[in-house]
Image (cartoon, rainbow, N blue to C red; front, side):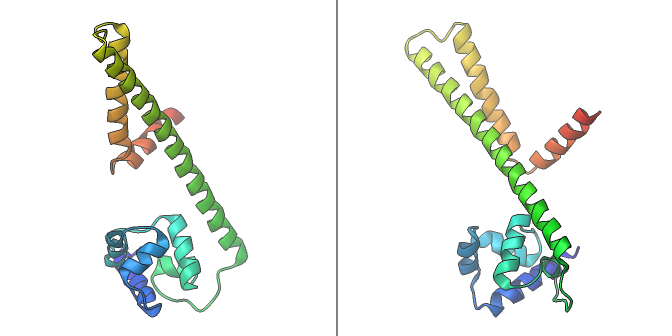
Length: 163
């Protein structure tokens, strides 16, 4: 897959619609910088955004991924499969987001409990140490899971659990 070619195609489609990067970014609910990265080929949109772009530009998903227009139409079965994959991808993202929210709330509750214990001069007991540890742990997990290495970590975890 030639990302630079695809990026130039994205730019061509945007200009055909007479849009600036900023206007397209607003329509797709992303930043202008993200659109710029797509158009330079340094990054690719998620599958759900590709489908949205396909509908907006009235081109097939395959054309977006090839970086050029095609004459023949994508068959209905293939299109349905791609849509199912996009739905699955969105479901996985939502599950991960829910998990991260639960962890964040747990860490936040632990931090509040620790602060209360700290202000009442009772932070030197087991509960204070536990809350401090949970807070620190959740912060570390949050940093790791929002880093660019999160996908690699999840893939490694799946491989290890499959064995």
